[in-house]
Amino acid sequence: MIGLTFDQGEMQRIAREFDASEKDLRRAYARALSRTARKMRTQARKALREGLDLRAASILKARLRLARMRPRGKKIGAARLWVGANDLPATAFKGRPRQTATGARVGGREFPGAFVGTSADSGKRMVFRRAGRSRLPIFRETVPVQDEVNAVLEGEVFDDMADAFMAAFRAEVRARTIYGVG
Image 1 (cartoon, helix red, strand yellow):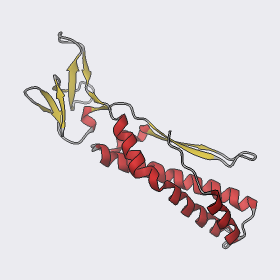
Image 2: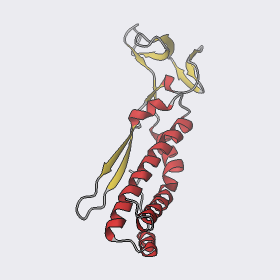
Image 3: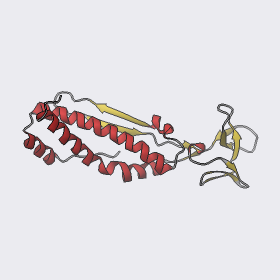
Image 4: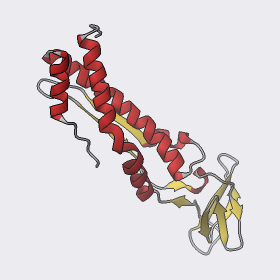
């Protein structure tokens, strides 16, 4: 799990700069956290699609879940982005499945001993592998992506989220104190 920490001194400086009340700060924090979490999910989807060289970002929709913990009492709330990093089907990646002499290939990924066939469900070309030496059963070929997902998220997404939160927090405090929004 990757955690983000925010500079408390910077938050106090912003509060003093705009002479914000405790109520304004709590609401600004909650809204800034929500905005940052949504931005983090969007950037994660884009970065993973490009970093993993996926055909479409729709496969990531069910793999990126945003959970918000609302502020209650003294707790100020939190947000969590869950990323499903289980194996992806071989046909989720860019490229057309092609049969080779040693197996199958999709884009730049090789699958020795696999074969290309048409799926009974969708009628699309897919990469399959036999379970044993007999004709059946066959399974769809998958690619482990957990290490790649972690590298993409740590390298491209989480680096600038603390700065994005502070910018959103400052904008929210400013809007609540100067303009009376909220």
